[in-house]
Amino acid sequence: MTRPYKRIATEEAFMAPLVRDLYSRGIARGAFGDSGFVRMWGTIFTDKNPFIEGLMDIGPLRLAEMERAGIDMHLLSQTAPGLQVLDRDTAVGAMPELNDYLAQAVARHPTRFAGLCSIAPQDPAASAREIERCRGRLGLGGIMINSHTNGEWLDREKYWPIFEAAEASDMPIYIHPQTPMPGLSEFVRQGMEMAFYGFAVEVSTHMLAIIASGALDRFPKLRFVLGHLGEGLPYWLYRFDYMQWHLTRPGIPARPEPRKLELKISEYIRRNVWATTSGMPAPEPIRFAQKQIGEDHVLYAMDYPYQNEPDEVAMTEEALTDSNRKAFWEDIARGLFHIDGPVGA
Ligand code: MN
Image 1 (cartoon, protein in one colour):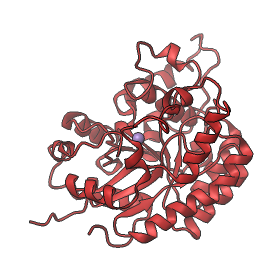
Image 2 (cartoon, protein in one colour):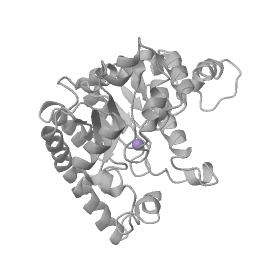
Image 3 (cartoon, rainbow, N blue to C red):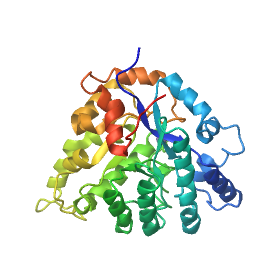
Image 4 (tube, rainbow, N blue to C red):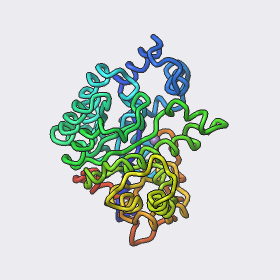
């Protein structure tokens, strides 16, 4: 029986050999200090790591796993933290080779793979040029940014050239977690600082800070994609709007006062933010997110190879109705990420 829709999974990681070499060499010479990155990745190239084989393969193993799960296409992205832990010159130098590698992998299986452009926010102007090249010459349909860049938040105006290029090229920015900001392991305690809970705290804070900075008044057509069902944001809409109003009332001692924005926080989230399900297949939260930010803003991701659970596909199906099923699995991803051709085997 053929399904009347294709399944596109949109937060699917790979590791380019070039990036693996840069990480290995940097770790070997102590370039990353005692960072979260080293705690997470320091042993991956020496131990028998459960993910490295799946990350390195963009071919038979991945296609077999997709078959097993009933997934027709992976939207590929270089796994976190991408180029964002490297020094500026190394990151900028590696950017074109990494994106060319991805574009070649997509070209070998154009009905099974699409890709997100990697950038080096260490150099916003060079990243802006690479975004244009990724869209125009390489045909990639979106951008991956892995949370902070060497400890800097994304709401700084120095990153606006990236937002400007993304908006002009109609390239959505997927904000993915990476090993946490310094301090987050103290803030999110008891071993929960990474995928357990800390990733959601960090990425949702990035998104809110970008909204609160006024960036979406300057770039109203800019689109962001968050994994993990929007990193908790759909649950908070009422309180965001209440506090945005409350904290600017006369006599309320908020310092600094929130910036005046053109819209309510919830209106930016409904207009500019999309949520993928990566690793969050429970039906009730999916329906809730659809209700809060719109059925046209919630789409599928598996989070391969980190949470490669074929059973979760059936669980996810339970959340959907016949009227939104095709949109969730296929059409929203096609529209967001410029996936125009045939999809599937
Ligand atoms: Mn992921």
